[in-house]
Length: 301
Ligand SMILES: Cc1cc2nc3c(=O)[nH]c(=O)nc-3n(C[C@H](O)[C@H](O)[C@H](O)COP(=O)(O)OP(=O)(O)OC[C@H]3O[C@@H](n4cnc5c(N)ncnc54)[C@H](O)[C@@H]3O)c2cc1C
Figure 1 (cartoon, rainbow, N blue to C red):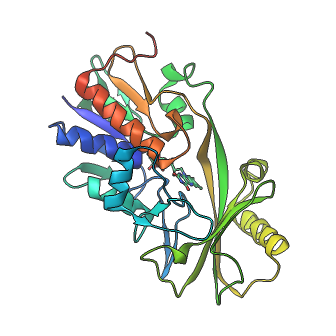
Figure 2 (cartoon, helix red, strand yellow; figure 1 turned 45 degrees about the horizontal axis):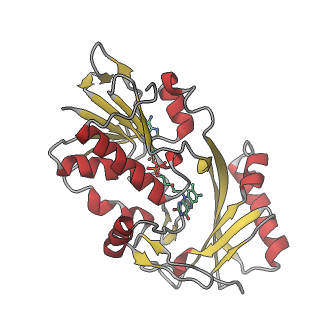
Figure 3 (cartoon, rainbow, N blue to C red; figure 1 turned 135 degrees about the vertical axis):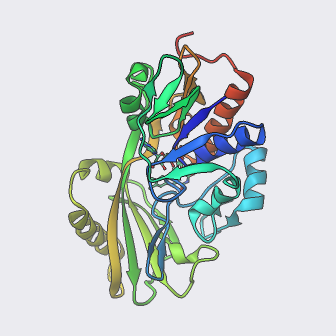
């Protein structure tokens, strides 16, 4: 059985690992040059910023056990049972990648073949997609109707470093302001605690309202917002903004994946179940189980 997986984030890699452990070696296509998807860390000289997912929590015992083995606790004041990848967020998936066939830097668009699928010149019996829902709608127009109700909010992120420590808590969350989250990235385990690297997330409303501004304008706006909320700050030694167009699910699909009526296409990702890394993990596992058991869960049933 030949299987292609699109996306090397938590969903794609979890799915690939489970398939590989059961004797099916999928080919994984990832458009970025690195692993992890939204488990992302920006490196600038000696500075490090986790500009996507900030921390991970576990509802299920199985995911909790995985985190106990492969993640480090991070407990800033006000935190719950929070975990992070160390030294970078994508360390959360790296233990699962051993021996997998991962093609980085390959943005793909699978096409239906007389049987199964084609990606470039290669033929696959099955395609498993883990791309964000908006991209899934584009790649697989046959699913558009089923995916109509799923929605996702964007997030503008500011990565900012200071010459000295600001007088702020290591982590603060806000409601009803332009900024939703401020955290000292370098307070996470296995980061350089001497660095003052901070990550700031704009709220979903602010990000939506400013979605099409350019990165420099976003950076300036977010620094101004920080000033207005937090007062003076030390000298800024580095700042950059990043736009996540598809950051956090606001309305999930409500089931861990969908499967085409001919059973050759499975489409999943965090957006099927929620807005969290654990949702991506569950979706990836569910797709692998479905393929292994040929579970009948079809969107046309
Ligand atoms: C700003 C931000 C903050 C967050 N905070 C948290 C948090 O604190 N806690 C938490 O649990 N979750 C958080 N999340 C959500 C979390 O990051 C996601 O739920 C999870 O990482 C999604 O994993 P995934 O595998 O489903 O998708 P992704 O990580 O998005 O992986 C999909 C992959 O598909 C690739 N891809 C897309 N199109 C193609 C193509 N055509 N060809 C090849 N590859 C393609 C992408 O490059 C990407 O690597 C946050 C997300 C963001 C953006």
